[in-house]
Image (spheres, rainbow, N blue to C red):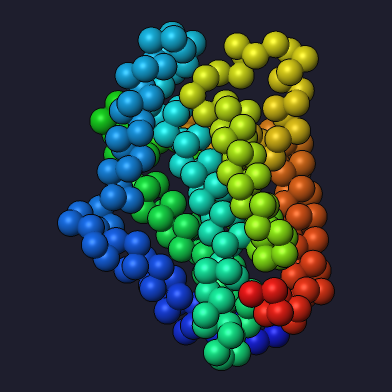
Length: 254
């Protein structure tokens, strides 16, 4: 599957560039929306929920935004990869292009958006007087593992969505539930202890919580990172195997 990947770097760059330009083509602010969107959401949620949870959370804007950015990348990246085959069916019917390249470009495109939005987090940290801890370097670990998880899950969803269109609708509901199950805007302590165990099984919550620990100057728990790593690698392997099994058959379903 990846034997020709090195030869397709140019194609990958062009696909990512195409996604960026097409999204903001008719927008006055253009790519600046990658900055304003998370910032505006943070302001709204901070205004609403800081009154409820602000006393229990140090620097609520940073807490919320650090979780929201990772969740948005997971949600948008996996959905982009899920729809990548059907979205580019016209191209796939006319010329031969490795189908996985569309899933890769969708995830990479959302990752670029994530990196752009990441500047907002640093800006909010500066404005709110948050300290920049050396542990921020360790945040690359949960980010990298989340990228693997998104890519693997995206491959699985791309295959399933090509055969069953209902997958897309069901996944939208799933990501909505997942948002509330990832403690984006509230501390996990408000959840009953028995339910907190379920949160720890959620890999997205694990990625968010370990990333937050890095932002707040705490070395993330090794077992949590190990769990996230095993989960991400397992999903990635399953995604690659499943995509290789059905890659040649996908064109028949378009």
